[in-house]
Image 1: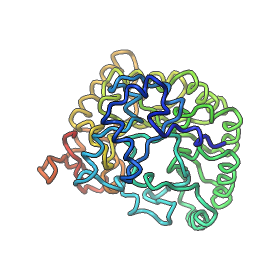
Image 2: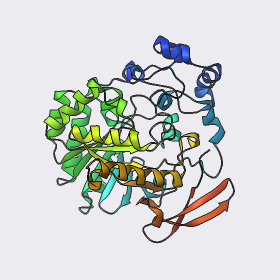
Image 3: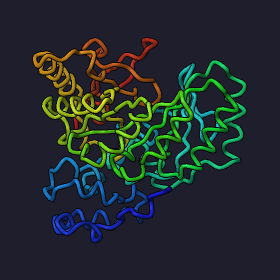
Length: 364
């Protein structure tokens, strides 16, 4: 069942502590989001309940509209399509960037809006769940290309759709490409965990090979309800991968990341990627400078191994090269040099084919 009707869409509807904590500037900015065509304000009651009223609280900052968003909405580091998905779009809902893997933009809603979202431009206009007409060219494309082995079901959050809708989608995808592995990309187990119960886990388990990729940024997101929801997936034998975005002021410390990844491993989840922030408009205040990110990852590795862990347990630190260059692992060796560009200094990142892609060296 869809839970989008439960979203809180106004600061005045938040729990009293959070409502009273809103500054005049935050209220004014939030009140003008729709009129300005910006990413709307929306949060689930569950995720809001995890937040504390302090302005720098790591949960509050992820959903509370921030006037600083307006300061980086334009410029060379504000890309409406930061991953360059438009370069690889083969139909309105299908992106084929990597040889054996495709991305299906199936979901029509999210269980709340993350203020750092890399699809915030697309989501500002609103979309619906994929229609029969939009799915038809996808199915034809898959049927004609047996080299495609995996399909990511994403964009926005597919688990906001009812189980019967998802099951119907899975059935059609499998009829078109019988060996296709499905990867369901979601944040629902964190933002709206009651949505994911044993029945949903059992339904997804029936469509193996299927795995779930869950977006988790902070240890406090793994409360008892989230742990229960994720446990239903594990109990159903569904592999769960965890993707984390490195966010300034939210999880940019080795201690916080180590605690998050320990919790994930204890729950039987696999930390899969730690991502450098994508260059979406209005998100620069969340960006950790690349040099700081690399130093932090080294500190994380040292802390982890000193405590007896294995580096293989840690997710790779990665970035999607801005504008469509593909995903690379970040290290000092991945930076070919620096240049001064309009808007500030950039690091030149080496793509898989040796091409260079600029990424800002500093945060906002």
